[in-house]
Length: 341
Ligand code: PEP
Ligand code: MN
Image (cartoon, rainbow, N blue to C red; front, side, top):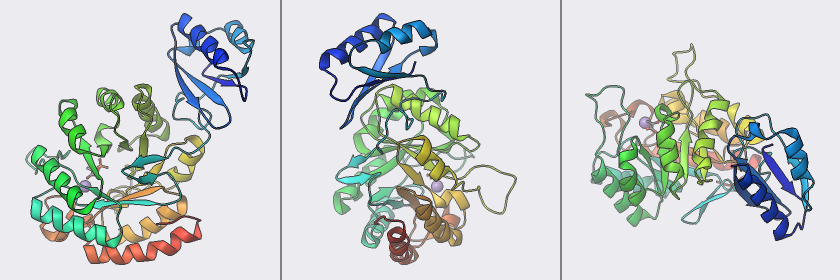
């Protein structure tokens, strides 16, 4: 038993009764009060509940159905919540009709460069500013990010442009400082299964952009979202950023089939990162268009004013003028699939 569906118009008492019953079995509940009906997601080891006990819950007045779902994730599933989750960040809604565009450098390098990029992406129509202050680098000798100083520059750029900021957390020890500055906390591909980190961001009230792990299945990815949601934070964005395959001609293989599939499996918004998906700037625009056609709710794209001097990911970063012209082209694609950008 994983989900308990109440009848439309069921009384408060019915809900209380159900919650008490769950409590008596050592289980917790996540109550979703939709426009039509209330759905209770059961949290804890539901395998211990016998079929007889399930029948007894079915008998409670006001209970319409008790469902045992086969999928190991629950709060993230479409069964649990039919309507798309919309996440409102400073007035920008992710998961609605409008496709949100998060753009900016891979890493925050210094204040002047960041401000310049922020101004330019804003001018081109981006709605969020991205930029890492804590960078997960393959080499310990590579630029690791500016830390809190970088977060301060992001906050200054937000102040100037009004763009909310998306930035990565790598270590639970940085949670307080990231929460202080970020509007959306990014969990990078390398940390998708850092379960302690997932639990920590799950106990904040900040939306979390959860990138797909380098070699993670959709199920593993949704289980990671479930970790965050199980702690009470329901605002998770799933970001496809390419997976490892045998192919080395592109940096990763951008799995765009994940987009419509996730739309079936989950109510959470889906973001596509074509930059890390392909690793080459001249392949970013076509894959961005394809991502919109596939149903992405948001895009996250690396932009740099001087890619040849970038501290990281210069090869895949768009110049601002190219980003601006791509943004103009995207409007037609968005309209063709009933979206706005
Ligand atoms: C990034 O966004 O710059 C980044 C490091 O992404 P990923 O975790 O997808 O590699
Ligand atoms: Mn990057």
